[in-house]
Image (cartoon, rainbow over all chains, first blue to last red; front, side, top):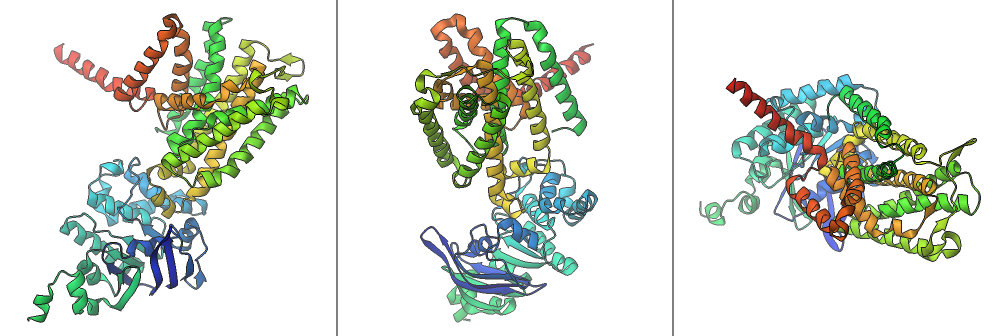
Length: 247
Length: 323
């Protein structure tokens, strides 16, 4: 459903993505792993045209979206949960969710459909439902992450781009969030492109994975194979060379 | 925010207060000051939409105000255009200018945006001074006609009071509706996090330029009204200092609040009049007030009720407890 062909993205003079190609099939969860500064977030931002690539092509459901602006891309069915959550702090939880449906107000679904989707989000994240009138800035980190995901889902995406949902969260909260991501795919068939530092957790729920290093894709395999891959274990899963080789 | 009914009620109460105010100040010099409060309210409101809601700073607001004034002034005094037509012409021209410069300028953020709008303000100020053939240069432009409808001329403070406040109330109504709409939410979302707003499908770039242009058009209309009530304008009114004064009004009144714009404009317009008895020392008092306001009331004048009400409620409870 999504195909990226040879994109190059720059920050000024800095060449951040070098001929990156990857794809996501319908209903798939794909994880992007790699060290800090490898270009994981840049891939997501290139996809959503927050930092548009300089060349290469992005194809979504058969049409090229390389030259579209961010709002048109959201309209096509790609929603992003930005790095560091970035919920709207001065808005209530409900208003954050409503903003997620920003483009849908233009359509003819009417407010009732949006209201009922907001309730769906509260069913998905029960923790949020007791805080619906609370300002988003006062939520805990985990709740903010849930809200950020819920907000992105309000746009009814076919493909969800998740940028480090586990960042700065307690292991139990991370588990809960990853559980929801798998549930989403099962219930709605939402495809997910997941960027993670927490490589182990990300590969566990993913079908396939890509490994990034200094702006290049260096490895693409089934997630289970990546988990077994010795080089990946050493570099990203925290196992010492010694442990692996001296067994 | 409050419910829609509260919003309407607040607006009606405010309008009623504006309508009866002249009874208490009739014929006096204070009425003239209230005319200026009206003009400054429009200007502060225009800046507040941009800064308080969308979070984009502009230090060139005086330029849009000045452009409105001068286009109106020159078109009527030099070319005999009808003042109403001139007001519309000025608003359209200023809107187009703002829209055009908005695209490159609003790509910038923070200090850089402040600097570029500042630069724009200074260029326009120099233009007013140097195009002497057209504007009369530093000595000003006189002979600007009053507004009129048929035989009726807006030539007294009282008539101008209603004219200017009529426009101000329309702008307030428009703004209240705007900020409570989907667009208003999108603006505040851009303020909170532009990237997040964009990935929600908000066309942040276009929306910022649009609100910048709206702010410029409001300022231009205020400028035309100013020119035709004063009948004389000079560049000194449209310099950098005035842009900063507008910024102060917005911050003192309350960022991101429609009525805060009025409170800030009222305080900063009325205060110098009352401080006149202090003569040259007024600036000391003025500075002190600014420092105290920003220290103890960062939310602006508009937050006074929310600071005072809980205190009163506590007092009431205690009294009941004693009885």
